[in-house]
Image 1: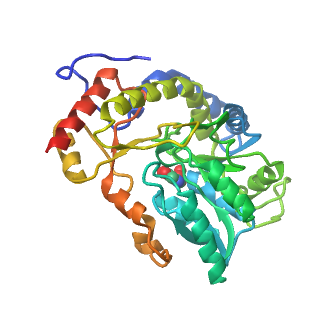
Image 2: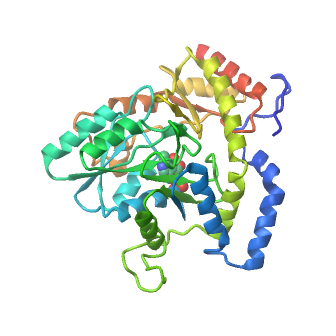
Length: 385
Ligand SMILES: Cc1ncc(COP(=O)(O)O)c(C=O)c1O
């Protein structure tokens, strides 16, 4: 990999993501893939689908992987397979992308928002336990499932969340749209929770050149059901509908691209970790870094910190120095019109505070050390006003 060096005066422009540099590295191989697909002509359900599924299972340690049309479908389809519907409560953090809540509503269940931890930015297990008790007291909903989200790449506190879920007979579906490559103990994301959804949106750490996603799971029955649901609910003969389903397939071209990118994923992950190590050592003490639960490694889908004040000013001053940043997320879900009818009984103060504090820095495998240091210099200057 090209690790450009240079001083701040001669640095190439800093991109927030850099899909072009990655494409230059893979272009010949991807063009060969396109050519193979044009030759065999199986645009749907070509051999690339099974190839990607096997590669994903091998990479993550999951027993099976089911490629689907998007990360959102990878959330909706397991909820359908779990038999969720009206009157079922699904717990999720309010500080996440809107797709997590949309998936719950598309599966006809009810989202119950949980607050996050101020240090990890992920679901607070204590607040999860409290929300279950609230729902049990209200008696109008059944607690059925929880979707911990691995925000910015850091796996949620699965040991604590899964213990609470098990004690309450609640199913666990991990939203790992941002955390492919993360790890907890000796398990990769994809084999930590019983069912895991991930996204191949182009800017994800493992992304396609269009929409895509996958469900990773250990239960062969769940995998069979997902393969049926993604093909309009048909049986294995693809004739009669045996359940309600959708068009949830991932086409051969996207599967080929993601499979090709998976071959360089570990190398890219190593580089993202090196960039994160520079950021973490330089920014410690200047802002709140995202903490990781014990024995947990981030996949660094994003690198996000929290600043106590003037977040938007910091961002503007970084932009003036040529450093792009982004805000994920400006608003917690319960403050969005589509989800405001699902308020939480005693508020979600940490989600609300984080929405005003977070700032994501450039993070990709094609940043040089010098560029990473330049980002830190710019952040330090921007903090001073
Ligand atoms: C946390 C989270 N969940 C779900 C999704 C949905 O993925 P997709 O855009 O592939 O549908 C995303 C995508 O950005 C996400 O960040």
